[in-house]
Image (cartoon, rainbow, N blue to C red):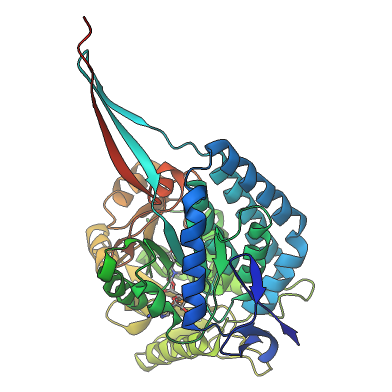
Length: 473
Ligand code: NAD
């Protein structure tokens, strides 16, 4: 059994509250132990970050750029072992875990090369007005269990690039790859600039209430995001909240089933459906409903379900039992309302948390599987007749992360997509992300963005510099 350690003020330390178990979802058994930190250790991490910030905030852009590039090089070099660790704690197939690490490398390099511009607001013979961006101080990153490594990188790299110090708190379900990540980052930055803390219940809320922290970047559920926001009020922490989603996709009549079925399947079942901006409700025109149901079922049946480390596996387990129970509950509720389960629909009778890709037909709005975020390997297929009506249904509900429209006529699809009430609207694709395009939700899916210049600037505060020029003779 491997015991992991936290990194506080440049030193690797055990948790003062002992350890907690980390499970492999492919076996359902414990494979490692994670330190259970104390609140005193959280205080130490914050104090170290505050002390480091005194100099780090004034480090040059070139200095920080070089350090991030060195971190990216190390991550790339250790990609294989990092990917294996992600599979063990998260469950996804090795190839996907490898792409998670390589994505993290790309995002790190992008952050390294980003510029933080000084904006010239006005220049006249008598005055010059500039808008400067300054780091905020100590940033806490709180991350979920679905893409543990990638999301930690999304939080940490722009925060460091902008000159902040960071305390990373991963999900207790998938803490290990983040602990490794922080160890790697720490090789390249001064002591205290980065720390990791892990702990059981209560740790997250201690962070949100901590007076020594200036900003929280949080990715997780809407309910926890609300709690973070309440806790952050004590010292008016800046917040970026990337929360839950229930993304709708509308397939317009006349769409080629053959051309889009595979992309739709992948967008819905990426990471076993445990992706915030996965396609979670599929609205299909009545005229093509059965054709799509059949094509998607064939793709689902082709998936090889199993341990992510086994060769040939394309579909891993659900990460944890609680999420699996929610998926089972939603499918049972749909069945009770007369739904047709086209494939899957039951937990596999074997060790581990396996639930095969499941397609559910003859469901509609007002049922739990459609109205709630499933965040797992099940997709409801919903028939529609009228385009204005389906747009209304897609926009119903309080989530607003992403949405998509699929069709042969991309102008028509684009016109409809622009009327979706969500932070990202895609046409003929879904959940497409890249480092230079701002990503963030609307409504109860959160606020603030990540990626691109807008994402970087979320880790800064502004200072207006107003210079009255002296009279020249
Ligand atoms: P979660 O909200 O249960 O946990 C997220 C993190 O918050 C974990 O590190 C957890 O330990 C911590 N936490 C728990 N209670 C806390 C508290 N009171 N204060 C502060 N932190 C606390 O979410 P999850 O189950 O890990 O992740 C799944 C959810 O995350 C889904 O709803 C999914 O849509 C969402 N998500 C959103 C995005 C996005 O970018 N919008 C990305 C990934 C996941």
